[in-house]
Length: 202
Image (cartoon, rainbow, N blue to C red):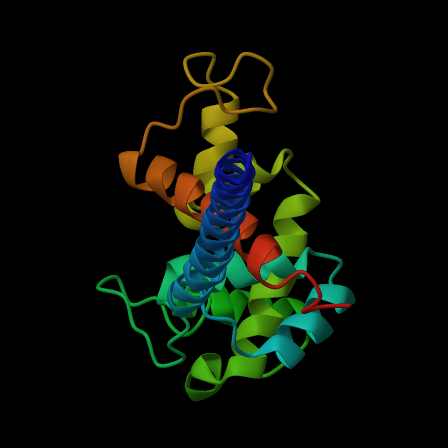
């Protein structure tokens, strides 16, 4: 009889140890999953850095554009480098062509100064103004982005061509591969910035 009691106690202890082991394994997996998520977000933040929040917040509000869209455009256009110059001569964070920047300055009643175009506040202000200009003429966002990259005159021609647009509003096909890839990159970055910095522009 005592032997049976010991066997029962051993079986009970083994059951307890097994349960503890299972709980420990589950907790370990949960911790690993949480750490992986946190690490993944931090790695993403190294890729999708957010700078010049004050300027983005100020001018996106002034010109009624989504600040996360502005951040995404800056990421794709210049990687956040204010001194960036493209092979075609586009300048600054939002990669404005000098002729476009001069045109925007005129619309704002300002004296054009080439050197100021790479200054973050001026560059973002001009870029936000231009986005507002495009949003007044095009929808949806993908068409606006195509116009930002390829120029609004080119996009207007595409919308008037049934080969590219069936309704004159949305582009079913973008004839420039570079512009098509640009739109996709900005849309991805836009989602990333909203995910990684949910309260950046509160």
